[in-house]
Length: 181
Image 1 (cartoon, rainbow, N blue to C red):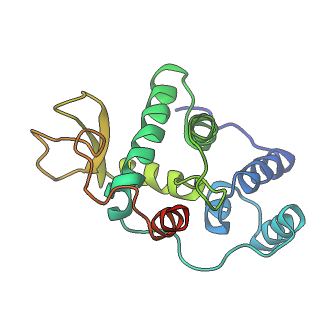
Image 2: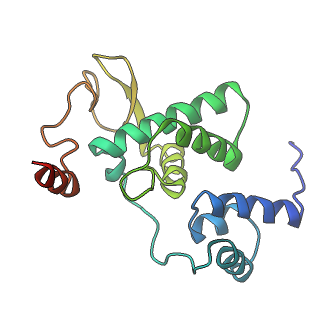
Image 3: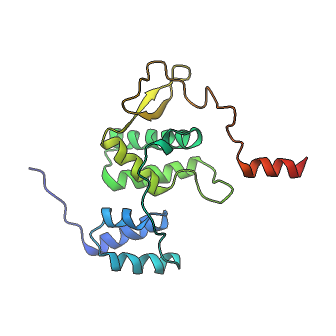
């Protein structure tokens, strides 16, 4: 039987602070720490100056399959898998380390936020653990990309090798290009 490490309250608070600073939602904090909801709310307000966002966490796998989120999710999962396989990091620490490395590799969007939030990255790992999502190897570039676990992916082509015709044509980008012209 494996020994369970004892985590002190100050370690729990440090973990909560780190997660809040990375943008974690309250439900993630409640799941990954043993701190009370009231304590987490106070901590969140103290660090962010506002109450945490309300509402449900993402619960659909479909977001991770769409073009741009798929590229970011696949990058994150590649980093996460490498860390868990080779650096022997597990659990929430693996998610935190992988997310920090992901942030170093991507530019933020026009709103100043990365495409993949920490909460979505955490949810993504949970979808992999529950075998709802997995990765498939692109038949053209050999990269590994997030796919629905039960889909047929024998000749899978990723969104980078076969870019959708409307890729990158958001309403904001379209309006900005009209202003320049």
